Amino acid sequence: MKPRGFTLVEVMISLAIVVVLTSIALPNFGPVVADAQVRSSADQLRDMVGRARQEAVKRNVPVALTAAGNVVTLSIPAFGAAPAVQLTQFIPTASIADGAVTMTGSGRANAAAAFEVTSGKYACKASNGPVTCLTVKVFAGGAARMCDPAKAAGSAKACA
Image (cartoon, rainbow, N blue to C red):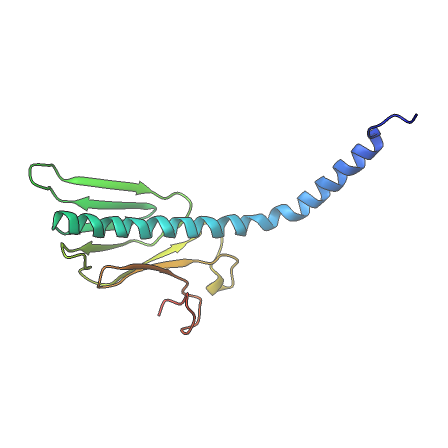
């Protein structure tokens, strides 16, 4: 009866193949991870805009959202006897262009705004880079939407 299992030579050859394939594939994962980080950061920013709108309507006061660097801050005025609140969220995985928008008590924005979300390491596809950079647009009606500035005007993902 022949013993079962692998020989040392078979294990070493298999390990060498895995190492070679990993070293070939590993550099290609950077842009994929950066793409996911940009999308996640844009999602977080869009959620913060929604939170600002929700708090403005709930309290019937203007709520300001500011983005500076990678920090997004909601400034909520005092409500009755409650003190003013500031909610700050640090988004470390992508770069957010500085900007601000204020939501009124009716849930509308004081003016339309756009926040650019880019990768800190890679260029955007619009600049022939590997990463899809996104824009979070806040419309005058208060709605927020993520869009891709590199898409053509007729596309569903365009920022038109």
